[in-house]
Structures are given as C-alpha cells and as structure tokens.
Image (tube, rainbow over all chains, first blue to last red; front, side, top):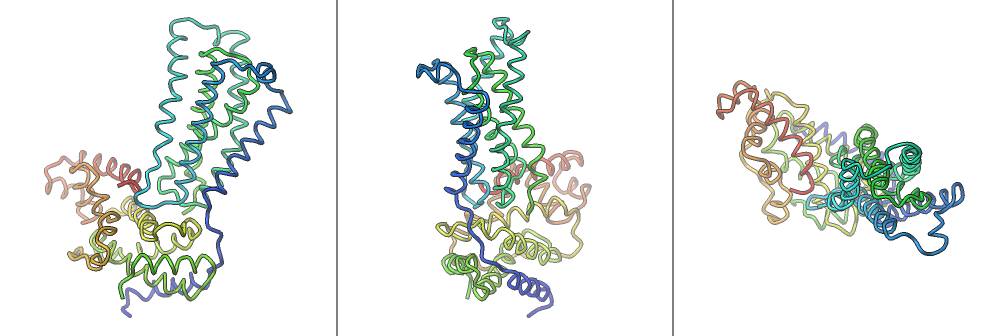
Length: 217
Length: 174
C-alpha cells in the first residue's frame, strides 16, 4: 500500500464501520407521497373553503378545466423530474418539466397580453383582492408539496441543487394553485393567467433561492 | 481484478442491506475506479482529496442508487458532481503534472466513454473548456492562460464562470 492510499484506506475502514442498512429511495413511494400531499391539499380546500359550485353540479367551466388541467400536469411533470433528480445517474435526462412549463406559460402570456390591451378588470378593485387571495392561498397550500419534495431532495443527491430547487418550486406552486382553483370561482383568463400563474412563479423563485441551502451532500 | 459494473452493483445491493464485508470490498473497488476516473483531470496532489470526498458522498447518498439500474453511471454522476465542485473551489495547482495515461477503461469501453469526464468537458464550447482546462485543471494563472490561448484575461474569467455553470447543468445529461 502506498502512502497516498493510506488515508483513503483509513477513511474506508471508518465508512464500513459506520454502515447501516438503508432503504433505497423508491420513485413510486416518492410519487405516492406527492399524490397524497395533493389529496390532502384538495381535502383541505374542500373542507375549509368549499369547492366551486359548478364542480358540485357536475358542469365545470371549459376554461377552468383547461387551465387547471395544465397546472395539474405541470405539477405532476415537475414532481416527477424532482423525484428523478434525487436519484442521479449519467445518461439521465429529466427535462420534461421544461416543456410542461412552456405549455403552461401560455396562460400568463395570454393574461399579460389581454391585461396590456386593457381588456380586464382582474387587476383592479375587488377582483384584485380576490386575486391576492388566490396568490396567497395557492402558495400556502403548495408548501405541503414543497416540504415533501425538499425532504426527498435532502435525502437524495441532486447534482444541480439550483435547478432542483427551481423545479421543486414549480411543482409545489402548480399543485397548490391547482388545489385552490377548485374553490376559486373566477373563469377569467387574465385572473387565471396572472394570479394563478403568479403562484407558480413565486414558488419557483422561492424554491430556487431556498432549496440549494437545504441540500446536503 | 479490475472493477466491473455487474460485480459492483451486486456488492452495492449487499451494502444497502447492511453487509459490511461487501461494502468494504465495494469501497476499495470504487477507490480504484475513482483514481482512474479522475487521474487525467485533476492534479496528482489533489487526487486523494477528491477520491475521499467522493467516497464520503457515496456513503451519505447510499440510498439513492436504484438496484434495477447499472452502478457505474450512478457513481459517475456523484464523481462528476464532486469534480465540478472541486474545480469551483480550486484555483491553482502546484503539485506537479497531470498523468497522461488513463488506464482501466478497456474493460467496458462503451460505458466508460459515455460517463467519462472528457465527454462532460467536451460538451462545453471550446473556449470555455480550454479556459477551465488551463486554469482549473492544469493550474495556470489567469494571465498565463490568457497568454497560452489568446483570450483576454477577463474573457478567461467569464469563460470559466460560464463553463462551470454549464458543467453543473450537464452532469447527468452529457
């Protein structure tokens, strides 16, 4: 054994001594916890503030279905990407979240375009107050999914903590705004694009800023 | 005997279940593999530290390997992360020349080529890769590197910054 190897061999002996059986991170278990957190959010909305009346009557508005479907898919796609990021390997490409984000970004883009054209009342008076409610409640609900994903990333080994944080924020914000949309009665593209989309943007920013500091290698 | 993916995967599965003997053998094989993996891409005096840091990360992240997947791409992802992190922190090598040879890659050439550090570095634009090679790997000062490759000193710094950022994003993909 040469001198250079000696310290490494000591380290190996210490690591072997420290070995405890581990439960491998399971993708399906992780996805199950994310889905369970989403179910808890929906249950919270249903019991605390109630569901939209058109949902209860079984005839939901088409815009609600389209927009909320996009947020749900974005939340799930981003969550799957975060779960994959926790279990690294060379050759892995978890960029699906980026395409889903691009598709969902059509909502705020349309909202902005209409808002700039002055074709909305979503940013003034009572409507703006309701928009702020959606922004705060959607973000708060998303914290549950955010906590689940951060715990996963702390146990995992994300090779790009900044991107993992960003995507975890997108996932949490999308699922949070999806859950609160089940209560929100607005069927206005500007309201949905700006306020509901704002939840995703806000959560993404928070994830990008906070998560890298919470990850330990 | 040179380490191969199948035997390392088998040892890793046993290690995850708590088998210390298998874990000892695995870490020893990983040490050998990592030395070869990093050899040409880090100054000899830094090699031991980098191998130890990677083994520590492997130990902490033992649960992140999926037994249904090959072992070496997982180990390479951790090694690449540690290498890029090392490049970020390391400013000047004074410990001598880099090794020219890269032994131990003849056993599974397809996997080795796919997960190599050369492939990761080659994914960068040439000026960024050159700036990182000269300053972060070969240990030249920014002024020396600027003279060697014809880029201005400020461009060398910008290329290193952008290159390292891009390397982080490409650790698993490239």
